[in-house]
Length: 477
Image 1 (spheres, helix red, strand yellow):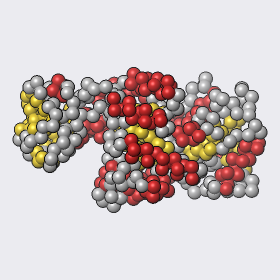
Image 2: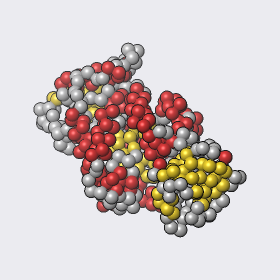
Image 3: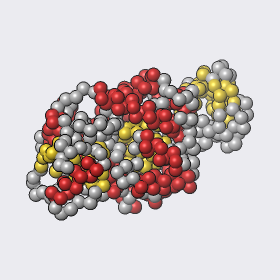
Image 4: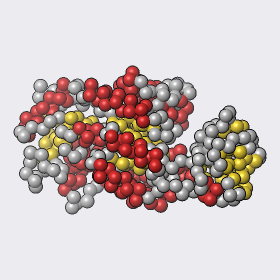
């Protein structure tokens, strides 16, 4: 076999540290698979520049694929602007007002008119995901009076949560709809939708995308307390999920977050949906060139638990060492994958239901490829068989050949899948030979190696409707 390739994908947030052409090229070469646009920051002009650069990269390097993910701002409650940071000290009184533009040593405004109605006396307010906390002592019609529990430096526009509660805001705001339309106009590959509380939000967005004729997949961000009881229906309605641990850890007790992470990964896996683990993965590398040992373990745990992708936020958006952060993520993921126990058969929890031919077929193709230690080649128009194969986590790479540009872009998020664009010929043999030649020419396979070739799926390509093929072929020079 050729050198092992990393199967866990890396999502990088693009920001001031990485928005230049040179940096996007370097991120891609270092290991970025998906470029994330955080709509909480920047404007449409800056994000359009990033999209154009990523598309330019994809056009220049046909065998390399970078997908584009647009992450909506969502219904965030934030404090107002302050001329200079306010030092909050334990025990002091501090107020939040719904009056706009207020800023003094003991009062700051919030951007949400129903804030006073949403909070109750006794609630714990968390600032910046829990970096500071305050207890609600009393309230008037426009003021919430608090006492500082854990102090710190309050800067402008800090995120506010109430522990154990979600704000009664719509999941998709007016700004989000503007950003979603921007994504449609610029043909992004994924939306990551913030603060999804129920499946209805996903259906609403998907209906809109259908009405636009837009082929964009919807990733739900699990980050609010309200989403937890509805996890199954939310993930089921979506095309994938993100474990957004920052707000999840603010709205729920932090000791619940690792258990929820594992549960969300398991649920996504059972439904064949990709799952991304995000937030604080290499936080210390925003300012330091090496990670903490705990951060390295965090990446390894996400990989071991079966995440399709791990994500960098501030580390690549505005950090001092964006390329080093990607390199750390790449090497830790690759090393962890190499240590996972190998088995000829996929894990017992993934054994398919006998009535579904496609999943049954993918299961046995994976077993054969693992037994023979070969990569898998699959030809797909929709991506469905490549996704099903990814679900069974074969020990080698899945080379997914597709004649659809959008499918190629989308498959890059899935564990172990390397998508390659190729026009299919009416002649199956000619297409197989061309695919093998491409792999050899790109240095992805060598002459004399074997490969497991899979033909199945809902839309037959070169085969009779009722037949499914698994072949093992030797690569000829």
